[in-house]
Each structure stands twice: as C-alpha cells, then as structure tokens.
Length: 160
Image (cartoon, rainbow, N blue to C red; front, side):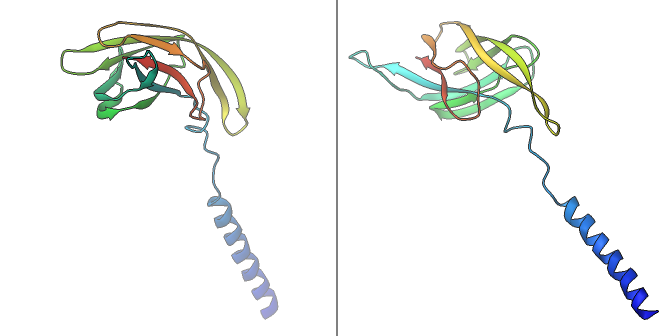
C-alpha cells in the first residue's frame, strides 16, 4: 500500500515538473526579428566630389499625420533605421533639424504579405519603389537597396 501511495505521489510530482518546464519554454519572437527596416546613412560630397559620411547635429523624426516619434532630438546622428507603414504604399516622415528647419520625405513602397509560420502568421515584405522630398537642408536621396530587411544592409543614402 505504501508503494502505491509513493507511486501516485511520484507521478503527480513528475506531471507538475513537466508542466512547469513546458510553461517556461520560449515562444517564438515574431515581432522585431521579422519586421524589415530601412538602414539609412547620411553623406555629403567633399571638394573632389566623393561621397563621405556626414553627421547631423540634431535630428527629430516623426511620422506625418500621427503622434509617432521615430527619433527624438538625437544628437550627432550618422545613420538610422526607418520603419515603413504596412497598411498603405507610402510612408511620410518629417525630419526636423532645428526649431525652424524641416524636410519632408515620402517613401513609396510595395507591401507583399507572406506566410512565415503557424506561430508567427503573416509578415510583410516591403520594397522601396521611389522617394520624394523637400530640399530645405536635404539635397538628394539615393536608394541603394530597395528591400527592407533585418540584416543592416544600407538601403538609403541621404546627401546633405
């Protein structure tokens, strides 16, 4: 009889431990690892016409028409990562350099949903197709690689 009680208690403890171990297992991270971003670097042309890295003294970036702040008064900015909207085929960003100096950048892109997995569902593949911008401080934009990704590959060169 004592052996039967020990067996039942042992089975209960084993079941409890199995439940705890399974509850602590990691869920797949579907949010940030699968969302593509645009890697953007800043450049200027030197005296010989060669592109060299540039640094902006101060920069705030907001998404036009929303209260989203992408970059908040960052100092000495050399590069940044920009998100693209999922629901429409353009993203409008406002680059604020000082109290009175701003540029507006419109990035046109395609959004193609694709199935990632049962746990993560659908994700969005995004490719930049073009850009328009004001020219208050920004001189030009060059799209060096059009597919947004997570690998840190340079997508956009902004010339000041």
